[in-house]
Amino acid sequence: MTKIQMATPLVEMDGDEMTRILWQLIKDELLIPYIDLKTEYYDLGLAYRNETDDQVTVDSAEATKKYGVAVKCATITPNAARMTEYNLKEMWKSPNGTIRAALDGTVFRTPIQVKGIEPCVKNWKAPITLARHAYGDVYKNTEIKVPGKGKAELVFTAEDGTEIRETIHEFDGPGILQGIHNTDQSISSFARACFNYALDRKQDLWFATKDTISKKYDHNFKDIFQDIYDAEYKEKFEAAGIEYFYTLIDDAVARVMKAEGGFIWACKNYDGDVMSDMVSSACGSLAMMTSVLVSPSGVYEYEAAHGTVQRHYYKHLKGEETSTNSVATIFAWTGALRKRGELDDNKELQQFAEKLERATLKTIEDGKMTKDLALITSLDKVTVLNSQDFIRAVRDTLESL
Ligand code: NAP
Ligand code: MG
Image (cartoon, rainbow, N blue to C red):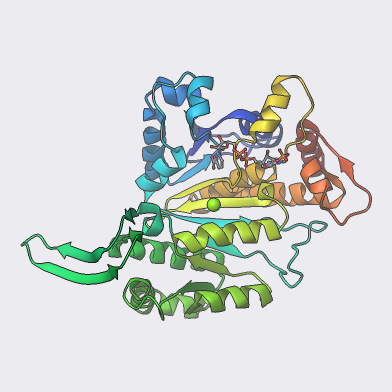
């Protein structure tokens, strides 16, 4: 059998723990036998990040800008315990944070829906994609614990020294204060990433803030989205037969619960943090959620939404059997391969990505799945497979399609 050829390499970012084990299995069983896999490999495993003073993460982000498409394995974000475990020189930053900052991207997360794993919101027929603004607001805040009586002011000093000054509150006693910000540039990038993604997926785009209460801050988000939509996207949306729709965040939540799904829901940073956990848990499992970082310049980085599944890895190290779900990691690969295929006009590669996704879903629908899904499925006859055997079962299905 001749393997599918690739014109341009994918940027491959390897990772840590159980997902690193799955990564190799997926490549060996589901990709290399069928594709003449061209990747530029970066080892983002914590040991090598430490060895290179995290330069490897920066290099992988630069390579992603160069080639346009990356696929990333889950990685450890170091904390105190990891400092000792891996004997780290420094508490290196989250690789995802570094890559996100380099690509100035927006994160899109979509549940993988499959027969037998029904969302607990019964009317959700198609997946809802959450687009989260990944910069600013409460995530880059300045806080003060007010000790007692006094006046709090918001002051902006321009370069030429002129001031804008507003009273926040005259405190009679102790309290709390918080300063947050965002920039027009970041909001514009977020808006463009969302509009481009909606066009790419041919799905409606919803956006919501609390502009009735936050008349300047949230209103600025609404205005920037609307201005960019009118100037750059209105005609393209009409041609694609899709809609851009703005509403208040509480109204959006109410509508989402009654909707059929199949749209993109753009959220401010905090709303996106909270709502993506709601959408993913309503759809069954974090192991069934894909994630893609899209930069305003049209660069894509695909990954699974879950972490390195540390608990399973420790079992694996003790020689015990694991049943770790590889679906989101398989879909990170298919997402990246499909996008590479689109950019290179490589039909074979796109078709293979489709086929591998179908094979993965069919395997589950045929009742063969990992333990996490077996616990929540509505199917009767279920075979619980270990990590390796699930991937092998997907290969068998792939061969049969
Ligand atoms: P996690 O790896 O997502 O796992 C949390 C729990 O969720 C697991 O113990 C497991 O539950 C379940 N789970 C997650 N993915 C699963 C899968 N594919 N198959 C089956 N069960 C799955 O989160 P964590 O344990 O909090 O974090 C571990 C490491 O991952 C941390 O070092 C963190 O920094 C890193 N992390 C990385 C990323 C990323 O790279 N994008 C994201 C999040 C976390 P049971 O144990 O009950 O089976
Ligand atoms: Mg969160």
